[in-house]
Image (cartoon, rainbow over all chains, first blue to last red; front, side, top):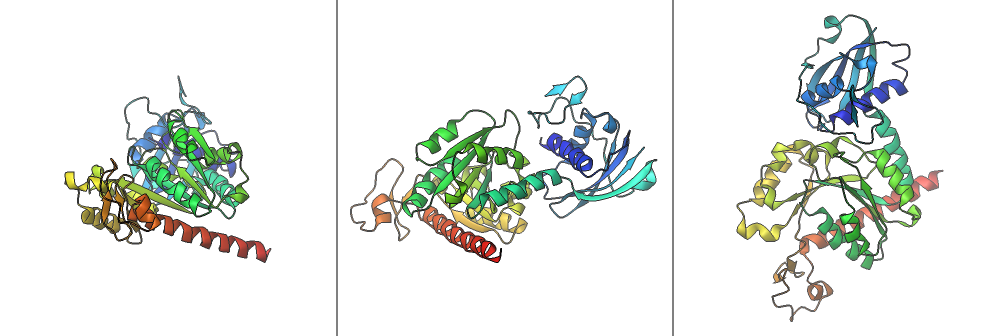
Length: 79
Length: 295
């Protein structure tokens, strides 16, 4: 169950690249997840529900699955 | 650690599960049209922060060839290191080992007995190593990394989670013992997809198992056709001609052996793996020298 770590890394990546500046709430996050990424999308959804970050409370993760090993943030929708 | 609200960022305990699974996420591509708000296109590697540190690790490793060993618990990663490190040492190559485990420094103690630098990362519950853990361990190894030819990273025993994290290594090597069954590559494809090398270990046990090595290979190659495969035993002793001469308990006839390999009863697969590592040490060293020369 490393999806908790991956969810935290995703938030770090968004933070570090300025995507969360002034953002009060992230409504949804669209992720491209490869079949060989080692990620279970159900666990990743669960991880987002349980992260202690108010901006991500109630975030709806959406997953686009493919045959690669990528874990890529495609888009976020924010308030 | 989880608190009343959930999991904290920067938690030392990343990776645990507190409650049941709630599959609130959706699979598909209808994102923007389904949710209100301002859409921001990101298109970034989700583990970018890990990638940045992995890049720093790669620079710190310098000329050292770095292998990241992945496997289920008990496949024989530490035993493999106990076989490989002395052979590399006898060839004049300097090795160091970074051990990853959820608890205890038992593996590090085994490596310490080989008289090579070793550092134990204890993850305290986390199911994988990440680049930051390895970065810190490099400073704790108390070695001059420039003097190292090979650095082995023994990841936490887990065939899923460690696959997601780049540690800055040159290659991942997945270790699969024959006791695990020949369907493992199909059940845990990510580890086999991301590895350059597969080591089928404990082949001395084949006579008492139903495992089929050809099926293991077929399944693994169906995931990654580029895999370089070694068959090893850390117990069985085979002479240079491929003949079993000595079993784990020391029985068998080694009297007629006159080569060093036969005298010391080394496993053929282990020797092939050592040759592969030596070749890659040389390649990495040459590539590194070329890079230095450019600058």
